[in-house]
Image (tube, rainbow, N blue to C red; front, top):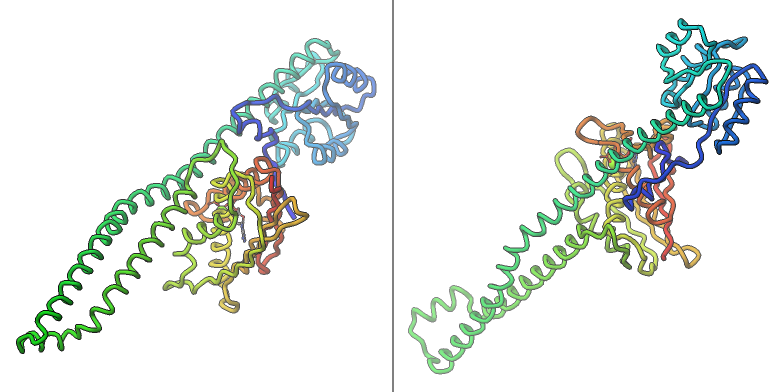
Length: 425
Ligand SMILES: Nc1ncnc2c1ncn2[C@@H]1O[C@H](COP(=O)(O)OP(=O)(O)OP(=O)(O)O)[C@@H](O)[C@H]1O
Ligand SMILES: [Mg+2]
């Protein structure tokens, strides 16, 4: 099981357009001198920070991994691993490299200060400490860090919005383009049907009043099999009408799929959303020169309507299903043993929430991939094919916007299952 969370800011609030303050910041003090620790601890605590302490480099590195502090105060002179080495290791690790480090050094030691900056520290404070100065420097670095995170978050939000928007626009655009010719056919079909009825009744009149037509007409009647034609023509018109009705329904569901409902909660039929998504993806499920047909098995339970943002849930279905298709195609490239299949199971759970499971027998994923799965911009696909945003967007939509959960069960070569739980209200 894996979950996301590279970006720590509450994105829920950002969704509503409000950039919130970060929760109480966590500061890690690394120093071997108990007096220094005590002094800094008191200053930070009284000014509302959460504080962690470590009295050597090794213990510090462990604590950083476990608690992801927002800022580190790091003493240079320590027995064992010194501050420089500790800093070097922090900066070498992808997970900890962005945590700002402030060095603590003796007032006079310029060489140390320079070395600290070269290793990636953002600032230094000098011993003996002046409380006000320590606080000012810590504050400014935390503000910078928060600003940076907010920028990152806004960029993420923008890309996400654009992705949702472009799919919606594409679908809406196609629906719009198809709408005109369909209307055209539907409108004319009604007249055609009436004209044909008129012609048929005229023909009937001829037959009544001219029961003995000339030979040429008799021959023609025979040649075109008039009786069959008259019987078949209304049926044909009927099936054309059914076809048009079906196209109109499809257009309607496409319009629903792409509607702009980002700000309004509605009750919606989840199965309809999944079906429309499958329809949009149908060209990838059908067999072609390279890939065989992907079988879709629907095990739909009895679901009530769900209070949700339907357009956003459709976006989640789209992401999960296209990932499943990608994974199946990858698997087919290496082995053609099993029948490609996507299984969609839905059920009502505890009467107050629903469960949707989307399971594929594609190539599955390694532990490493599973760990990063929901991280923004994480992708194993080639450039241009994947942006690595699908699942992080889906994760946010399900957890933060709908108060639900999104879990992944998968192992390499064993296929993958994604399970969504969302409350009905
Ligand atoms: N059903 C799946 N089976 C196997 N691997 C998967 C599956 N779903 C996701 N993954 C892995 O997780 C990665 C991240 O998925 P995500 O949907 O976030 O991004 P993407 O599909 O690579 O790109 P994007 O969705 O932005 O076009 C994928 O690159 C893939 O390695
Ligand atoms: Mg994807």
